[in-house]
Each structure stands twice: as C-alpha cells, then as structure tokens.
Image (cartoon, rainbow, N blue to C red; front, top):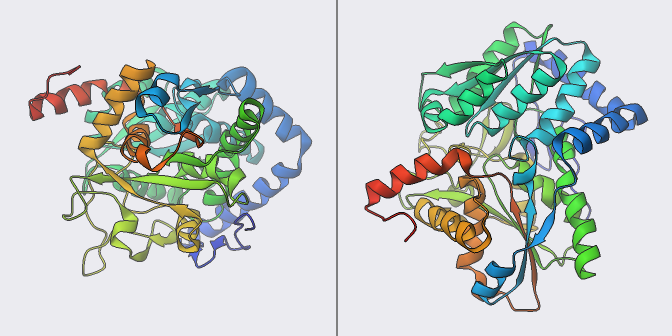
Length: 403
C-alpha cells in the first residue's frame, strides 16, 4: 500500500478538504505555500532538527517494558516514550515546527486551542522560547480538570481564555480560536494541536509528528532486527497516532491500532468513539467521521480524558479505517484508569489518561498475541496532569487507590 497523501486541496480520499469561511482561504493558502517551501529548505530542516534535539530532547527512547511483557505473558512490548519530551508529551513536536513557520511568515502573535492542556503548554513553551505573544483558548470544564496545565501556561506568559459556551470543552475552544483567527489573520498564526481542521493542518501536523514513527522504526530494527507486529496508540484528534503510524503505513504486515475513547460505553451517548457511530460529516474545516445526533447536529461527547472527547477524528485516520489499513477499537473510562494503574505499577511510568487508553487495550487484548510478536505502545504523554482527577474519580467510585 502506498503512503496516504492528500491532493492539492487536502483531500485524503473523500475526507479532509478546506471547508472554511472565505476570510481564511488566503491565510491557509499562504500557510500551505510556506510549509511546502520549508519542507524543501535545508536551513529550515536543520533548525527544526536542532530544536528537537537540543530543546525537546529527541530522540525519545524505545524501551522494552520487561515487567509488562512478563505479566501479560504474550508479545514483547516496547514503550515509545513521548512522555519524556520537554513539556511531557508529543505535542511539542508539532508546536516547534509551526512556530518556526510562523517566524518565516513574519507573524508575531500565536493562538491555539487545548483540551487536556498539553498542546497549550507546548504552544506557550515555544512562544516563550521565541518571544511571541500567546493566547490559548480552553473550555472552562477542561480548565478545572487540568488546573496544573493552566498554571504552567500562565507561568510562561500565555493568556489562557476560558470558553463558557456549549459543553465548555475542546470543540468550543476550537470555535473560539477560529473566531479570533478570522479577525486577526494578518498578525496571527493559529497553531492547531492535532491532525484536524482545514488543509494544510492534517498534513502539516502529520509531518511534524512523524518524527515519532521514524525514530521508532529505526529503534525497533536496531533492537530486534525486525519490524513490529503491531503499533498501538490512543486517538483523540489523532496526532500522536498518525505520527507513529505514518512511517509504517507501507508495511502491511504491521497492524496499526488507534484506540478511541469509549467513555461510559458506546450504547449510550456518553463517549467519543467516532467510528462506533459510523457517520461522516463536516466539522471545523474538514470532512471526516463525526459524532452527530439524528438531526445532523454535533453530538455531545464524553471521556474521562480531556484530550480524547473531541467529536471528530483526523481525516487521514478516516481514510485508513475505510481502507482497512488501521483498526480503531475503543476503551471505556474504567478500563483507561485500569491501564493507568497497571503501567504505573509494572513499569514506574505514569501515562497520561489519553495514553492509558492504548495501555488498557493492550492489556485487554494481550491474549490475541503470541510470545513471538512485537508490539510498540506509544506513551504519548505523562500522567502528572491527571493524578488529581484519577484520585477524585476513584473516590467517587469507592475504589481504594493503589488496590
């Protein structure tokens, strides 16, 4: 299978595209031109490599999870440690690439949206590094769930704006960021945090995050002498997953497994498993699989993870799913907390609640693998930001912590 590439209008098959107001067409076209030029510019690539190496801390390790492998008694499991990036998650890879593009375009002001706060922290970090004005839009509920990350953003000089409409979570934060961008396109660059939105963002974010998969490919070949049987990653919007999947897409013997948020279960409406509903729509600039009500309105979503409760999924994931190249199961809130506990206890690694969905799937499906199999599990972020929320959830459930 060929690697998936969008056409000139950003369509991954029938997905993607540029569904935006006329006001945004020129800034998006400018961004597309600058991005294409930067990809071919040795000086841009050299500066990005330098920043990722000296500031972000790349390459991140690929570590054998010895105790997890032993406890599950199936495949040899490797952890791709994106939690060890500066700021604690993969989000900094994309933020660093986009701030360098903003610098090339002569923009002085940056806006962003954030759900779990990790993209907001990454954006605030690169803005502080390069001296940009920074405004982050974040749903009020997410600000309460992720108070630590709000403090981190503000500590680095970012203005964090609470969004108090709708569900007061990520979708509404994106809406507010886009309203800001429409008003301030001449001075402002919008750093979108996931492989979502209008072209060129899904392509651009994938390219900046593919460093994860390129490293993992080299590392597993060096350590094991062969490619993995499967790669497992959580999927909210889908940036960490597409980043690690993309360099393996042509390798049809490698299963690609993106784990969605099942919330309270897909039988009701309290989840964010887009493929479980199986409906295509248009949301915030792109055509993709979207959770909708019977009238075609964007449905309410739920996940214990603030970074997983978005109503849509990146368009390239939609194409991979239709092609049968990637699988997209889901994990419930309860299972995700179980995954958090087990990786913490087995490996001394506290995964973000987002990453815990991937961990939980691996635990649940361990029996489908053999000891000859190799699995790479992408730990997309660290769980410091989630410990208070998990403690409160356990208290509500009457679960003794550490049991």
